[in-house]
Image 1 (tube, rainbow, N blue to C red):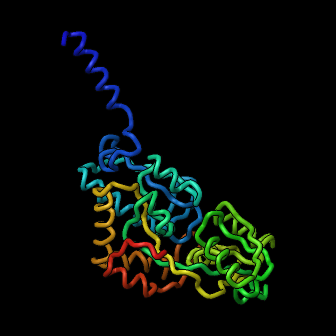
Image 2 (cartoon, rainbow, N blue to C red; image 1 turned 90 degrees about the vertical axis):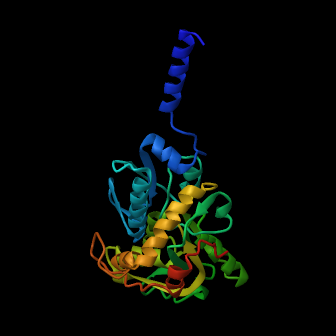
Length: 297
């Protein structure tokens, strides 16, 4: 190769190295090349991940995310690793992860076999079930009271699917009012466009606790379908999954996970200092030892 050829090759290598890696690149390789990891957060998933301001998210899952990012810093020997945080919704969280827009989601996403065809899930960090939020005095004690009545649910959520199935099996003919996110769904209930809001029980307690008048809402109904929450990462990335699972397992075995749980579920949380008062479920206690990442359905 002549001198001109060497110069051209050098320019091509330099140009290639300046480009971000393809979305199907291994996550740690991508992060190392860009000295940046992009993680997501939810804007209203109290107490897992919620925004206190346009630039600050807090929550149980945010703390888990930070612990994983710290482990990435150690693994890659990059103490000054840049962390970019982007908001996601129930509709775009999987597509944006798959196409490489971000690298890790720890929030309130249920680990299902169907979703497992598109993404991988880490060790389950919570177990929830579908229940109902209603206005106090609305006369709703359970699902039978919702026959032929409008009920709000987030579009595409497992709660919508579970309640539709329950409605069909029990011939309730529930009329679904679909919302884009948790805040929109709660507003539907506040505006009396729906008699109840179907959502994971813990999220309902979070919405209630942070309402202007928490006493005006009640969580009712039996728990429908226990669902495991897990951090999401791209499929076919065993090295990153090993790091994420290893971090969560370490937190669970050391007692740090239980401390974080108490911080967000048994203690006053921002912005109003409310207490959810939700003891750890028997399923989650069992998973501190089992360390399962399996879907429930």
